[in-house]
Every structure is written in structure tokens, then in C-alpha cells.
Image 1 (spheres, one colour):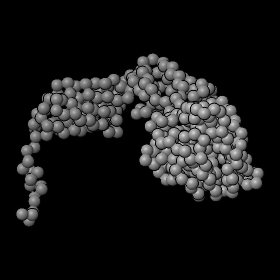
Image 2 (cartoon, rainbow, N blue to C red):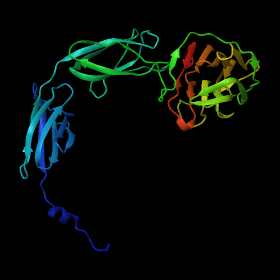
Image 3 (tube, one colour):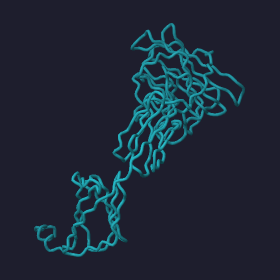
Length: 367
């Protein structure tokens, strides 16, 4: 047992050779040109296979003897189906097909952001097609000049900074010149726990000094009311330079990165995550307002400077709402560098993309 040699070639030669080879070429019926990337689906009661034509329009498939249907589909052409194709052992089949081109039409429209204003530089595309994506103009308008008749997914992606703008995907049927206006949805985290929306600014002035100083400091503070964050209720939090951390008072988190991330810090609200410095002109304060059940609690960073450029000063705050659970990030002054991070990162056990928020807006709420 386990000794000796296996002659694989001889075994293959002795095996029954019953597969039937089907070859063919797909062309454009109007021009005769070869059609690449045509999907050929081969089906019957027991099989379902797909192959794609090459750059020269040809394809090849080997199948057991049986009766099949061949369905050919490609962008810009009508779908053609060959039914009842019988394959017999020892009789290879060559089947060429010419597909009829369909008419093309323009697709145009206007893209609006979550506030209903025209959005420039958004990318408009038809995924899975050879149609080149376009970007919206300053007034939010776009045109896809030649789109073949058919059914598609229209996708619109906002350009950075995303702020609260999410990505839109919707059905699009083209059977003539089409107008497809799009209002982008609010960004949400992957689990749907938080969504982001711009809100009117209502600045809360700090009242109690936390004692935070320099660029490497942390203070654990008691929360005036329990704060539920991604399903966990907290009664205290650590405040550092630009971060509220519900898990631990961490130091050294000055090198911000895009969120979410597998790396620490976790369980944070990043109001303005960057390498900040708190000098004699700066302070971090808290403030509580309202009656029990409808209170708000603000953590306010006053006149913090950027380590990379001490001439840049920023004042911002994170506000927690007792009644709704909303978290509002507000920016009183924010000559924001392009590399700061502002978001919510959930604890590692259940991390998703953070509630999308951003600096350089008067007020942004995750709720």
C-alpha cells in the first residue's frame, strides 16, 4: 500500500472521451466586427455555465453530450438565445452568432447633496459597462452622451471631502433620452447605527475646565448622564487632544489616520483628530445644559493649535444629546488642514465604517 507509480497519462487515455467541444465567434451584425466580452450562458436541466468571448470575439467550451440552450448577451447588443442545441459524442460543433446592435441615447441630470444643493465633482457611472464615468459640473449637472438601450445601475459617488454625502445606487432603464436627477443619501455606518446630517450650528460655551494641557495629556471625566454608544452604555469617558475615548485614557494618538481602522484608538468620537497642542492660549472645557432627560453635554476644545503649524488655531466641540443619543460635532473656527480626521469609531468587537462626520462644516450630527 502506498508504493508503486501511477501513470496519469495512461489513466487519462483509458478514460471515456465523451465531451463535445463547441467553438464559435460572435460579431456585430451591422459591421461584422468581432465582439469581445460577450457573455455566453450555457444551460439545461442539470448544468449552468458561462464563458466570455475573447478580444477576437471567439469562445470555446467543452460539454457532455446533451441538449442545451445558449444565451448570448453584451452591452450595446440585443440578447440572442439558441435553444435546443443537441451535442453528440464525436461531433464537435462550430456556431457563429451575429448580434444586433441597439440604439444609444443620452442620460443626463443634476446631482444634489444631502442639503438639496447642486454638487460639483461627483462621479457618475454605470458599473459593469464600458461607458466612461463623468463628473458633475459646478452646477451639479452631468451627461452620459451615449448609453445603449438596456437596464443598468446608476451610481453617483461624491468627491472628497464627503462630509455627510453618501453614495447613491439606483436602477436606470434606458429606452430613449433619459433624465436622471439624483439626491445623494446621508452617509451611514455599515451597520446602520449612525447616520450623518448637517444641522444648524448652536454653539455651547464651555463652563468647566478639564485641566488638559500640552500635546500629550488625557483626562477621565464623569458623564452627567449615561451615554449609549454603539449599544454600550458609558458613564465616563477620556478626553484627549481632539478625541473622546469611551474605552481608555490613551496617550500618543497624535498620528491620525482614516477611519475605520483595525488599529487603536477604538471606541472614540474624533471631533478633530490631529496632532494638536494645548498651550497657555488654549483650554478644554465641558458644559451641561437642559433639564434631566433632555440634557446636552459638550466637550469644548478652545483655540487649540496644530503642531505642524502653530499659526493655525481651531475651536470645536462634541455635543452628546441625552434624549436622542445624537452626537453633534461643531466647529466655531476651523482653518482645518487637509489631513485631520473627524468621525466616530466603534469598539473593536463590532467595528463598522464610522458615522461619517467632518471638520470645516459649521455643524455635523451623527444620530
